[in-house]
Image 1 (tube, one colour):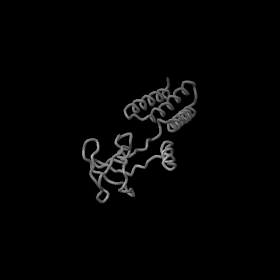
Image 2 (cartoon, rainbow, N blue to C red):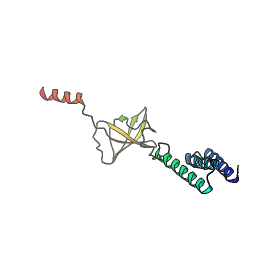
Image 3 (cartoon, one colour):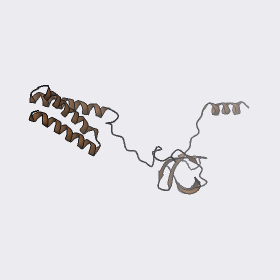
Image 4 (cartoon, helix red, strand yellow):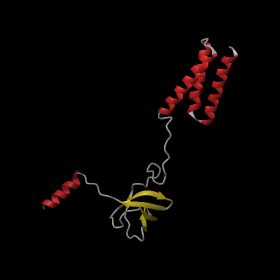
Length: 160
């Protein structure tokens, strides 16, 4: 094994160790390019062909990873409004009296501060939690869904 072949194997090994320490798959994809360069060396290709093969394979692996579900960045969502993080979001509650868009109400066996979301009415019978900021629940009026049973009840009431 000549000096070029040893270079490819050492470089691929260093990239794999670096990937293990950082946890990014991109270094692993570049290591695949270096392994392709080592393979082209073993097949007797000249140095310029080895470099081109390593670059093309590494680039193709990075692009493939980037387009896969593992390479996409996850958009960071605000935990205060994410129902996957906070199970209170989407729950309903009642508020007896509002003072300038703020109130106190019982929820889950304790009193909570409640803040009305901008543009929401203070006279709704039920409110839905939209966000949780510390010990304050941000709520919006809960709109009733008109499903088939509601329409049927409405029709029955009109015809009676």
